[in-house]
Length: 307
Image (cartoon, rainbow, N blue to C red; front, side, top):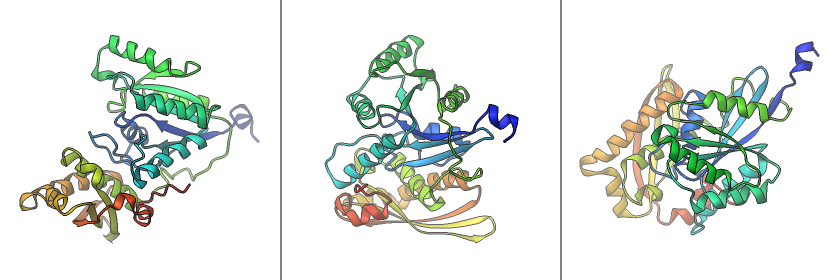
């Protein structure tokens, strides 16, 4: 072992990125990774399952785990989503709690902080006050104090804007400082555990959520049937958007096919940003009644509450 290695032992660990829906967790993941690996929508509840973002340097490996917010347990989909968040908390060395600095505490925040205390009381907690560029300093200070009061011990706190990359370098330094000594779990060039086809499915769903109104976005699921490189710089993707009822199918397709065309345009842009290749995206829409309570289908989506 060299003198440098003795002075600076390698550090690694899992960082659960927690917070209520639309706090900016997926936006932060994409900003930290320097590329799109998570679907982002202005609507809450875009994320449904854990997704890793792996940052490796000469001195550390930070494994970020993007988590979904908690859902009311009204169906098997909701229970599966909740189990994703719970497992991430249990496995975490550090919990990075994302708070929306523009709004007051919610019941969801209280439940999430309660879960941390119950499921992993020994985890180090870092509080990131996000969206500070979208409100007043007085409002940030007031909301920050309220968030800090939720925890038994006041956590390390940083004010950031994930969208504008404000404060994210300092946040990474804070995370690295809090990491325990540990091994390099993943190859240095690996940035996520998900396959590109799974990321593409999440980006298609996020694009659909961005185009659809009211409750319909939460009734859709996406499966990628084919993800193949047709030539050196072009990828062919065939995917199906599933809805629960026949009437919803027409809404997703839109008059003259305009809605599904716009969803495809938005999704293709995001997927190309992710994989750096030209994409031909072939989308179709199918009805799958009550899919939220279909365990077999949920497993196809990568969700299973039996964990």
